[in-house]
Image (cartoon, rainbow, N blue to C red; front, side, top):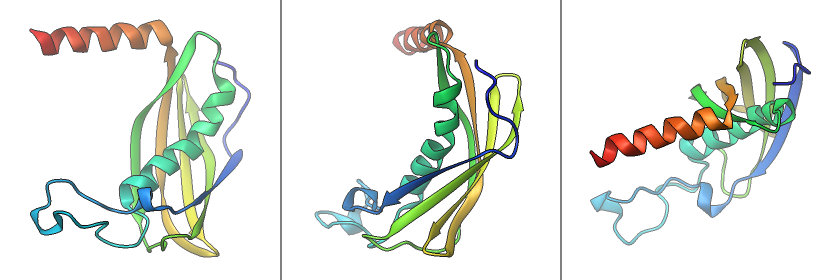
Length: 142
C-alpha cells in the first residue's frame, strides 16, 4: 500500500442522475410492471457513488498485488436529487489506520446538501481476498 495521502486530502466526483439510479424494487407487488417508485436518486445508488468517490483515493494507493474492499458506509440522505440532476460528491480522508482508509463525504446538487456520511475501505492482498472468497464458496456448497 502506497502511503501517498494524509488526513484532510480531498477528491471529488460528478454524477448525473439517470434512470438506472432511480428507486425500483423487484418483488414490490404494488409496483409490478411499473417503472421507478420516484423520479429521484435512490439511496442505494447514492451509497454506490459515495463509495466510488472515496475509492478514488484507494486506486492511487494500491500496489499491483493489492485490492481495496469496502468495509463500512454510514450516511444520511437529506434531500432528493431529481432525474437529470448533476450531483457533486466531495470526499475527504478522515484517517488512515494501518490498511484502512476512512473518508467523510458530502453530496450536493447545486449548493444544496443532499447527503453526508462516512465510508471505509481496506487495502488487502489480492490472494488474501481470493482465499476468503474460495472459503466462502466452499462453505456455501457444503
